[in-house]
Length: 390
Image 1 (tube, rainbow, N blue to C red):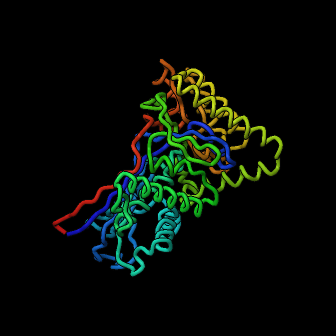
Image 2: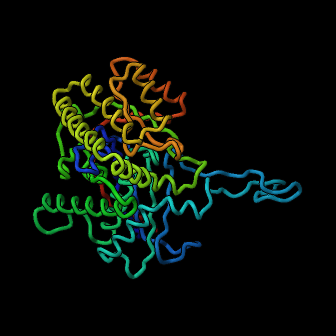
Image 3: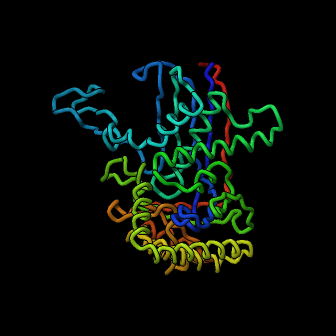
């Protein structure tokens, strides 16, 4: 019998306040209907992985995969299937040494839980399998979803699970969910150096959250329930660069924003106040379901993000073409991007009554991966199952 624990967490989009929230200003974010799944089980000890430690397998993440050299053998040399110039082995897009850097959040989650809770200190073998519908480096919270789902699955597997207390079940569940959020946020901080609490809050609780004066508040906004948006992702996995880039892109962007703040302190203070007011106005617009006003505020927020240097040319062009084709609003979402890192990142679009199809087509022609997303997705889910055939 093999015990498996599965945890899944949603993607997110930040509607307003990204980057500025790191400096204590408001931010508004919502979960969307794409998820990342982490499954933890006992390692069977077969094969090269051995009996101890952790074996991590990452599958089917959009824009991530393998390459196969079909004709490796020289002419006259028998391949694996007995044919001349036979099939070669499947390889990662990048060499193994570089690829391991891409799992920085998983490795840090393991390290943190071992140090903080003492999990697996005796070195038992653990399988960690990750499957995701969330593109990497797309500003959709893949790192937070990874942290939340990994922390939750490992804690459940090793007996520190959600809702495991003996008192009021609902109170226990709330307390344990908050513990997962705090743990996952600490992991993000350790990897990135700076991280807002928004992403891990969304990945844990789902729905929508407002960060105000550093406090994460869950919101019920009629305008953010089932709102259909478009996300245009550019170069989610920049294959021309080392794969460590998509794990640590956010850290580099955050550092550059902080440096710009130090260089232009008075100007940056004005931008911070403008962002604060923009987010407050957006919450009011959503309460009134005034989507025209919401779109205009998204365009303003995009301009503020451009001013702090996180809107590369490719993302700027996606936002502009969306606006020209009738979108009510279009803005960079998440960390944004840098031209020097290939312009990787995403644009969030609020389509108008018409033109949605034209906007999708235009972004695809520009080289973007375009996703239809719906707001207000469910938060962390955990389930346990047993494979009686193992």
